Image 1 (cartoon, rainbow, N blue to C red):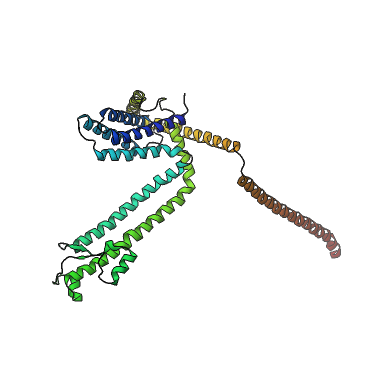
Image 2: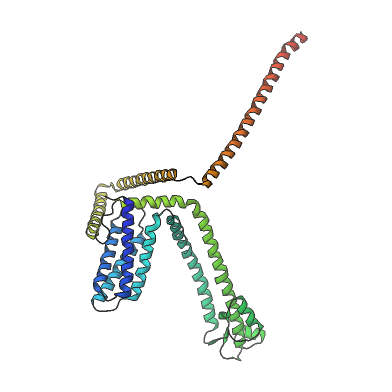
Length: 386
């Protein structure tokens, strides 16, 4: 009845309604258990749709785990409200974040926003790797400052005039890094106190200033610039391959949307449950046949081959439709100017090729003349020799 993309966008719009319904319910009708039950049934239908979808690469393991977390969270909220309790605000906040993440995932097939979303999702992996490195540096300076200020209370002096260095630090970085010991300790238990002849309070303040300066140089300056460089490099690398990745995502989405019900969520819940049960049965049957007959590997190869052929066919049809739409569109001045520039460059190449052919013909004529002269001189030399 509907095309695959119409079904996809219909379910995406239905998911947007779910997001708006949860926000409206949590803000204005948080004690209405009927609305929370509707939200729970809606998310349950979405989870069954995800689990019943074919393995085309569109839904990853993280997407399935995301939907399971949504269903469990909505069930807990519904149970709490039904028992007369308050809505768990933490679960409400987490589910709202997951809702918008799923909406972003659904917009990955949009021709304008899709490539940008693919780049953002890839950069999230870079941010994860960067977060591990940053956590190492934070732990390093946290342990160092804890060891230095062990049993020593500190006081904030960022807004007190101690010396002109206070003004310099405020101008370069800010007053938030200016701290010192609260009480002066005249003992000399630190190594720096014994070497430089100062008391422990001055030694702690000096060493603390050095550690804070190193942390400022390493974390906000060096690591953040490293993150910018990594993301710029990732963007440059993805800009070359994002078109192919977008086509793959589009084809996998079409394969998933072919099996979607004609009704949107949550009206499709009975059909989604039936599709999920059928998929589970087919998986169990395939595993049983693989154990008994040993033909599981060939079945997997055939399934992957059919999937690759289907993806290639979808991409070819989509590229043909895009080309037809471009031909139907109005010709712009930029396109005409580009064609004129390309035709001029083509004429220049043809002229160069024609000149090269003329030179080649002239050289061939000269070689023929020289060869004829050499042949004519050979009989004359033979008669003179006789």
